[in-house]
Image (cartoon, one colour):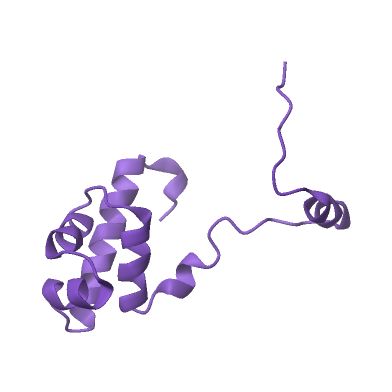
Length: 101
């Protein structure tokens, strides 16, 4: 599925459905996932239903379900050339971007 052509809320719903399927595949209840991840059962339920939860809670649940490795690639730099690598490595921690136009 190409996520470029669907709305953000549809992506959240899709991720919730996938999370639920993974939980059921692992034969875990919502209560068990909640207890192991340190979140409330309502948080697990909300995530599965496609409602907003914090990124931290999403990470906690992903850890319990053994899917943390999938988050590892999120926001990794896309370095396609030597110039990209040099520019990336030379950036300071805090850098203002000049306005265009």
